[in-house]
Image 1 (cartoon, rainbow, N blue to C red):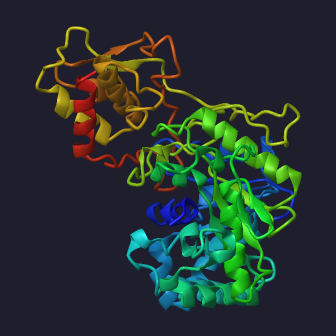
Image 2: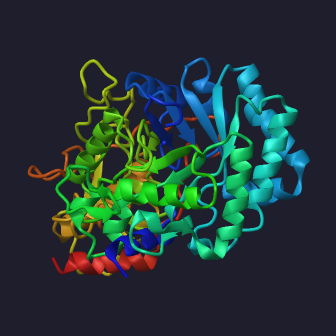
Amino acid sequence: MGWFSLALGVFLMVSLGMQSVGGIGANWGTQASHPLPPDTVVTLLRDNGFQKVKLFDADYDSLRALGKSGVEVMVGIPNDLLATFATSVKAAEKWVSKNVSTHISTNNVNIRYVAVGNEPFLTTYNGSFLTTTFPALQNIQSALIKAGLSSQVKVTCPLNADVYESSTGVPSGGDFRADIHDLMIAIVKFLSDNGAPFTVNIYPFISLYTDANFPVEYAFFDGNASPITDGGMNYYNMFDANHDTLVWALQKNGFGNLPIIVGEIGWPTDGDVNANPTYAQRFNQGFMSHLSGGKGTPMRPGPIDAYMFSLIDEDAKSIQPGNFERHWGIFAIDGSPKYPLNLGTTNSNALVAAKNVQYLEKKWCVMKPSAKLDDPQVAPSVDYACSLADCTELGYGTTCGNLDSRGNISYAFNSYYQRNNQQDEACKFPNLSMVTKTDPSPQNGNCKFGIMIQPYYGGAERRFGRIGRTWGLAAASSIFMLWTML
């Protein structure tokens, strides 16, 4: 099997935006321990010229903040609600009334799409949503019709690129995955009948992450890679080839004119040797140039509708797919730009940082100079800290991967301390830790011991205090063993 076919296949391993022509969109995820206030995020969107935003839920505070902003909105329905809406049109009607109709009529939110589920057909879900996604899609559409919104608000279902594949290793061999082929055709016909788009998430980074033989240059848009030739068409980058594999799948099944939205595309900045600001800047700037050129792809010339993934880092995301999952943002958790990026939407041609962000006091939790590395409390303390905070910037090829053992331990302690709002008891690892007002960050390199932003006390349950045990103790122990060998 050719590497292109393999690259298509890797999307089934990962669960991982812009709608109207001419505008740039972004995914706004909220799985953060300390999310920025929604009003701050909406200002960030507008200051950077984002005309569209894609949400993964219908959070009231986020939608309220988007009111009268002029930003077009795609609201989301999480996968865990699909069964409810699949079996009850009344539940779908209630959801649309509360989360769509009310915000449009009362708050003047420019809702344009409802995303029903998120990548529900990933093979890693083992078919959990195969029987509920399409009925839920139908019932939400019925609810929009009843609310008189079906011409203004369209349904869609963001799907991972693993729902299609190529039997020949080139785009023209594209068709929908055999095990869901009939279901996909039913969904595609439904979208077409209702004037709705097909939404797909495309991630060249994942191809590079999962396939050691993937040609690195083909992930980018510089034109340095050897092209794939498909008939009379040449493909110089993974995005165009993957996108047109979908176009061929649609065309073969009678829906060659169905609009396509790229719901997610981006590159992470940490958590893996290939996840770094240099590659992220190269990829995202290349993609922006690809968009601004207006050429489209060989099979779909013209403007491309896409939402960048993502706007801001999310330090509470699951890292089951990989440590990079918390580092997709073009902005850090505090709304500061992570690298230069010209979106073509600001006077300065540069990213504009979030305004009026408030930080905690400048103090850090570190390992005591007198503490011993062979203290039996070190390993369980590091385990505990990392399992309840974020240590994904530690490890081979990461931003803080060159710290020595004491540095790694201090980083873990400080991550936990900041996550817990610098509470005194959060820096009381037994005879191991102390609070310092001297920045412990290395003088050379990009590794920074962070200071957390002030917690936002909003009305939603996802706000302050969302600290999940998202990094297992076994993984933390393995990392600690690696550190002690440094």
